[in-house]
Length: 347
Image (cartoon, rainbow, N blue to C red; front, side, top):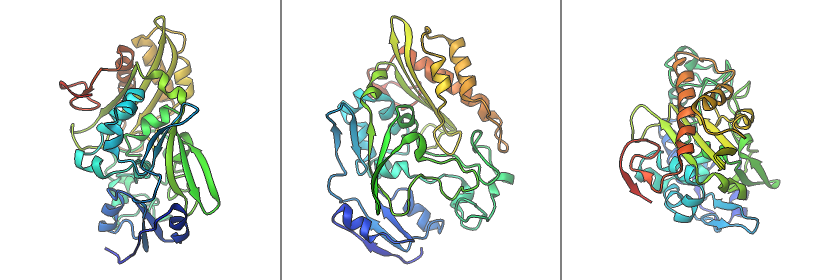
């Protein structure tokens, strides 16, 4: 591991003042430290933000929105009864990710900033435009059966690995950040960037900006009675999604009054198409209707390598997630989160 300086500031302002090019903010470290061990990430300075005041709370705001501090641990958020009741698809997604031990360490802010699990990005000896602009993309001609089917470019075919971010995108979350030029809000839909010609800039953050919190708007609660997260993976525990889907419906007299739908594991960002949601509104839940919406959601999907199977898998996952949402949010999260198997384990 490359030697680095370590700083533990006491305030947000001090953390921002400590940042210089080549520095990195350290939260739970469940992704960054792994990358440092392999040499895929080599920061000159680590700025430890885990003890900054005011960033570890879950708050209900006067306008009905919910604010989640960037230092809230994933496990604490998923097991907060009030939060899980209001946003069940988010809780289910968190419990589908990683392992219990990692969820106890990982933070909300760090989850948003996860780097791709593309093996060529993780390996500093492989060409990777995301890690080193202009180096090339080894995944294009390599092992790529789990890579992107939407939004990819010749420069990068990596996917976003986060479970948590998929329902956040579906629910119109907003990310609060602060940097040298002050604070601003970034809509979740714009927080993760498609690779295009600049795969080395996967996040909509300016240099030195720090994630402070995530806000879920008041109307994001509307689908809580019919809300699910479904994850398809190669093994049931501690594996990243091949494809996942967050689906939420608001039903009124047997018809869909509102729909929210996003896919994970298919692109460099959670994939959401408003037209797919709009076509569900006004209709009774129906498999054929869900099939048509899934087709709209996946318009333009194309294999980036040996992964054509993911297009059909994504379609079926979206349809199944909508079916599960239409059936209603379960009283308890399944024993195998984001799975249709297993007995209920806990509230």
